[in-house]
Length: 431
Image 1: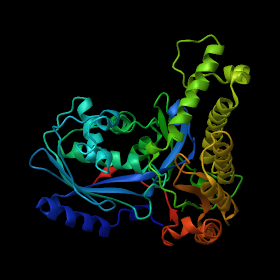
Image 2 (image 1 turned 180 degrees about the vertical axis):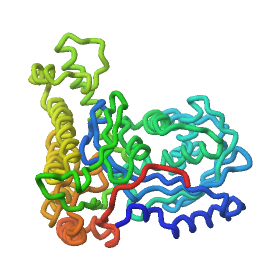
Image 3 (image 1 turned 180 degrees about the horizontal axis):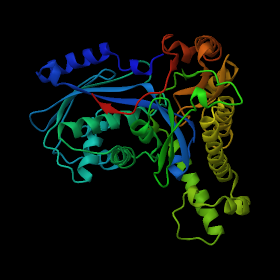
């Protein structure tokens, strides 16, 4: 599969035609913000603690066709949701907790799909950017990926940021947009996640892993070795990415499980730091030396001990995985992904019966090297790395086996999108 086939020329032409009619402009004036989804093979649930993560963008995602407005109006339509979103870019946007305290009928649009566009305006306003122009736009996502756990929220936020920046001639670097999207997620929407999602979306390149230290924000792109660089062993077989959807859909901000686990990680960090005599350092687990963790982990009550164990073991898996990837040892890389999935279940205690069943089915599928949840593990899908020549057979196996154990959920998913074969892709951009 050619990673460059997304977005296709047909998709781009349809979006440009639609927006040109909405905005009453020539089709050539319409631009498209391409914002890919991401996967995180290793580094699960540790970005919010300043851990190191491995991620890559894939050839599925969000497309936002837009034309700059002649005034300050934002007008949006969606391929997934009904209704029209309209607001002005000079309106002062209030974070979620403040808007919900007001009359819900007055602020209804704050709580529907338009909240990400408003959040992008909020983020840009909060850093003093001048936004005289709005946009007229149409946004849609790859079919079947709603609530999939592939960072669709971050992809949407990034798309709106890039469109508004383009319309207002703002030159913003990828690292600045990582911060802006963090403001959308953390401040505007109230989700206490880290920066891994937007970093992968904005920094990845086709064919490589993005490795980011979420504490220092340092990152590097790591490619697999070229065929000629293999000396003592044969090059590994080509791999693809399998995405298996569970049919579970629930907004992350409505599920207390995610934010609760972030708080538990911070509580564990505070206990460990104070046990070592440190009462000043920010209580995140990346600020706890491994030696301090080993010396004082017995002081943590069971739930906190599990969260800390996941953090430190996952950080170690990231380091081993980075080495395996760079040496082309994809079987080792896959085994580490599977171990990450197991720790997410046992130590981070995320996931639910359908997702765990899907994870276990993937591990039995032909050609699968490793699998784990994608996203927070409370909904969405599982990912797997699979030998490319067995990907179609593996996808059929997973569809068939999941239907046996979860017939109701599986019946809600289109057979064409229940298990998808994907590849790595380029980062977000405007075309």
